[in-house]
Structure formats: C-alpha cells, structure tokens
Amino acid sequence: SEIERLPMKALPMVKAFAPSNAADAWARDGAHIAWSCLGEDCGRVHAPGTTVLDAVTENAAPLAARLSDSRDGSAATAAIGEWVRTLADTTGRPVLDADAYLTPPRGVSASLGWHVDDVDVLLVMLRGEKRFRVAGSRLRSPNPHA
Image 1 (spheres, rainbow, N blue to C red):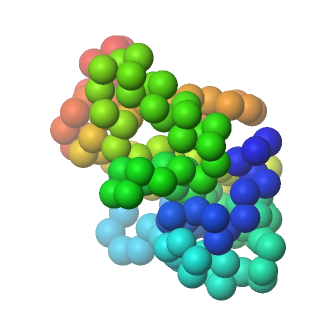
Image 2 (cartoon, helix red, strand yellow):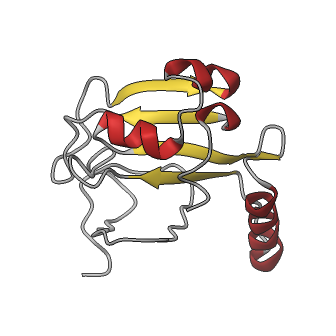
C-alpha cells in the first residue's frame, strides 16, 4: 500500500512499540515504546531509504506512523492530506492527527494492551484482520456494548 512504501524520513513521527506488550493485559508500567523518531531523524534510525514496512518487519512489533500532523498541517502525501480534510469537512469535527498502525505478519500485534485514549479515535481497517475490543471510558470499566 501507499503507506507501507513511505520512507521513514517523510513522516512527522514514528513510534515502534515494544515486542513485550500484550493485548490481554493492562498497559504495563515501564517502557511501551522500543524507539521513536521525529521527521528527518526517522531517516537516521534505520538505513537510508528504509520504508515503514521495512521498519515494522525489522521491529517484529506494531509501529505507529504519523501521517498527518495538526501542529503544522502537514501530511505524508497529498492524498492523505485530502482524506483528512474531507473527513473533517464531512464530520464537522477537527482532525487532530492521523496515525497508521501497522503490525508485522508474525510477532506481536498489540500496541499497548488495554488502555484509555484521551481523545476520540476513529479506526479504519485498510487490510488484513484484527480483533478490536472496546471498553468503557475509564480504567477497568465494563464494555458498554456487551
């Protein structure tokens, strides 16, 4: 996909999650991130020309790539920028940031385990399959949809 082929240095931020994270556990104390980088520095984390797919495969754990950044209105590609603007116009709600989460074909698929996001989240599944579980809005709250 277009996202997988993006060079690391073209992204405002990339986070690689720790392979020790588990989907069935609460987000644990300690480091959840194996490494992170910002902008041009992302091109220095790996060899020049490394793509997002190369990085997630090497890490063998999920990777979050910032595709659109609200701080400066930048987007990794013109198509992603247009999609974010259309989403904001259609919903009437500002889109703060857009991140792509990629998981390796083998290895860990959990980014943080059970946790509470402090912003509204819209998930768009582009390819593959994944089980998403949604709970309430507070730690240890029951699933309101069960």
